[in-house]
Length: 379
Length: 235
Image: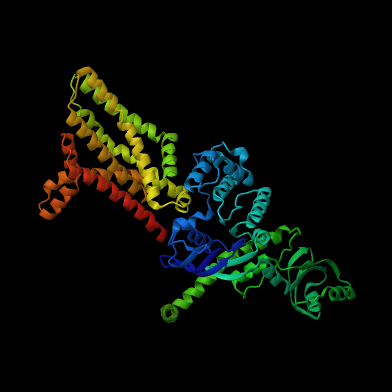
């Protein structure tokens, strides 16, 4: 069991992690989700005793990592963001070194063989780590964490650099390990967390913004509904007509997909299904519906909403399992990459505003007077 | 500690570091031994020792520069610092590994001494023992200083250059003290200097305070390394 209580970490004046509290039960797989720079790795480094928290407590099976680091570390297998590999060693030498380092008591040969089989690196066992591909290096890092059968596994982005087949393998492995181990898994890939974890903690700007089961978070997506309809008809009029359908909240048409044909993004009230009404009204006017799909909100959307704050609406949504065309993919990518940056900016500006409110007011005044002076000068 | 010691020692011999170190050490000492002792037909080994000594101040930092800086750069320190081992174990493992390579180098004096004993029938025992002990203690102190400095930086070359400078300063400080007129400072400089204590050994005098001094220096610097690792966690 892992208990994190009011964990705070400052780097100079920057708060990397701010008052973080959560608990991971035995046999639970916790997904640690957040944009880059949210404080995921910092938290994991604190839990494993690599760095110390400025404030707060991290308990590993009831042992404070600062009070008795050696006892606490015995129960932890850690795969950092960059696997800590000695590049000049062979896999064999490296794993044997880790075995000695962890003072492992399990029969050596059999244990190392088991671990290698588990992460599928038996075929590179005698090769020098330097010459391995990124995927293999990642898995050697995974093997290193598994040596000595630790009760707790802390994995920082374990699937980075793997090909799709290997990603599936590692996910299945983590799922299997999760039955006997307590696992914390960090990632900024949502589908991964969704596929593997029982519970998700979303962290942004060093603060927990959501902590719930994967199921509940996914259920949150059911409330809002939106549709994308490709309609062959005069743009402005179509929008007007659609807006008359009961339950429709908003319609936009920005994407011209074919000459004169637009994709209409329709946002509807919760639980309302407007598809039949839409069909009839379009048919009455002889406007053809060329395509219609309902957009389920994905975890991705929730993530963006949560990390960006509620004032941001997400315009385009990709449906899981459906092919996304290039424009859509690009805009989605922009949103996701922009979201991380934007989220940071929002949080920082909010924090800065909260901390320095009186000063900010003074600054405003200063700017105003400056402006006046400048104007005067120009005249 | 055993695991780290074994890995470090292997790393020395898997890379050219140890071989270059040993080769230079053997060549320099061999040069003095052949030219002074064999060609000059003398049993006075002081040149073989003093010739090696200056080189050692430059060579030992090459041995120690990698110890912690490389770990930090490659992020392998995450592996060591999150393993269930104490910081002192980590530091001692690395220190002892470097010390072992140094001892392998020093072992070259055994055949030299045996050859001289065989050829000349005897050697100046006190002087040889004094030189050996002095060189060993001084080397071990330089290694602990190098290890400490290596923990301060990610760059090996910076660690090496800094260590060489510190070694020279510590070695020369009591010589420089002669030019200092302020008495308290001069006293401090003389007491921390390595030179006088070392030359005393070379004259065959095993001064117990000097032995204690060097052993303390080794412990102080190893302890400081532990403190650096500890401090880094709070950074």
